Image (tube, rainbow, N blue to C red; front, top):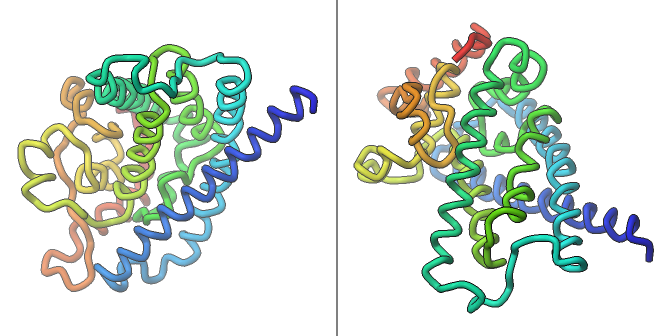
Length: 266
């Protein structure tokens, strides 16, 4: 088998894996939403179909660099991914996970903030914000340009920061779960978490909901560090939940912000 064909097959395999991972995660949390908050996604069938189409297209884009890196790791030893847990001290395992999450969060914050400038928003990021309000299917609903900016992060980091294959799997799991749950329209964590000291530094659905409601704030992915440092952290948002006595505040904010546009500079 030629190298080119082997790499192409690796990219195809990674595309399938990423697509299936997205479908399973989003379907699981969409089902949880249906059980926990029946009717929350009522009237959004067309939007959800659009989110799935864009997300599967993004999976194909994510699969290309991932497939190239996977082939290079297995066949050429290109990366710093290691399989022997004793290759580095055990204390490095959790530290490497934090390094990856922090680096990914920094890249996401600045590219995400850039995409809220008028031209990039109009060309690319508007696809993601067309979900009004977002659902559990919206996590990878990106224009190809935005998908490319996200697809290169982890494949680039494996050339710079050593990581055990198991720790890398944990990073990818966290990335998937947070991407889905931050868009599903309700908070799965208790108030003691998202409204407490831990929630002051970690991003959950309540924090990201406000970004979709107001556009020009809360740009982070995992941590609130960059938002706090740069003055773009505007606190937690609210949700438009069926039967909630506060019904109307969170969801209405999302819809109204969507109509206004939100292409102004951060």
